[in-house]
Image 1: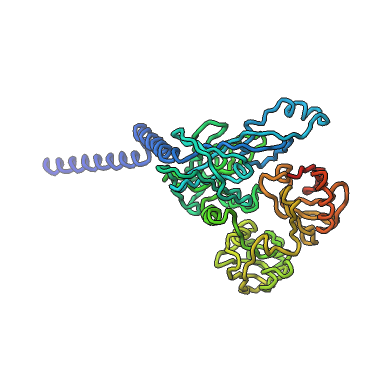
Image 2 (image 1 turned 60 degrees about the horizontal axis):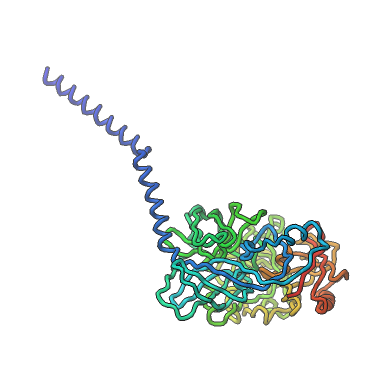
Length: 489
């Protein structure tokens, strides 16, 4: 009996001990000791330190010199203007604002700054067009204090990408490219550059959004949005992932104060890869051209056109004799696929067309009257084959935009019913038009106090500004009209 009782007591003790061990293990699984938590923080900190040591030597400080004219206007969405830090003239700040009649345009040499990064041992450096595009002189300074004069290899205002080069230098640190398509919202990223002249600064944040295509900063957008601090001087610097690879070029911020407000934008490196070779070999970028006016689908349009969802773009207008017209695309068609890729929205579709080599054949899947149809189109070349509606002259290049006639569909889309004028179709980043707040979709009602109805009248009125080198525009954005004075460059 005693032996049986001992066995029972032993069995109970063993059961209690096992239960205690199981509970202890479960509790420990859900809780991390302070020591382990501290170790995790230390590991993260060391990872950032490792990336900084790896990346910063290849990031360069760019100093630019340019002849500029006072009196530029800023808007909420801004590039990190390389000249902002040096534009502090007393009369411009005080008399120019309080007494407009005392303000006189004047030209002067201005020093600015930006960032860039070396991506080739041959001395090629990626940066922004708005940092170096109009510079008279470019000086590059490395982390090790070496300083070189750089030359522009090529720039692309429509994507705000530029490549410069320092000649005859060896042993240059180089940054590898990553894959911006695999980035995920919430992923750690680091922005490196020279904010406010503070050389080689690294800030840390996360990817807060991807695929921003309707921001209104450049013509071709697919921005990575990040909360890593980006300020004036960061433009052109790299946005890197936790592997120390470049996933974007820091380009712009949303700001009402001119400084960081929690939202920054970077050009995806995969987009840069597609234009990099053209900039190096030709100095410019040639883009595909389709010849249509497109718009995003709304729920009402989905019902009207008997569609399943809002994926795709609606063809609002087809230019005569354009590649689209020759391929049989019609107004009212909905493009749902382009070259095997599903079409999501206007911004993405414009990028797909633009980044496809001119004169190449590709297939489009359209939805026409509820039925899908496959069409083959041979793309044209932008600027060379653009016809029927979109107009640009040398004078317009100086002020930085193109226009097209205002059709009934476009008037309805933008809310310009019962108005007459021409619609701004594209605006060059950093141009007088962009700095004055003119955007794609702005309606021009008058030129030099004369009402205009179409592109022909617009061009005639604009040409009269050649002598004065100034043009006064009456423009309308949504519900409001205002006058804008632009100086021809």
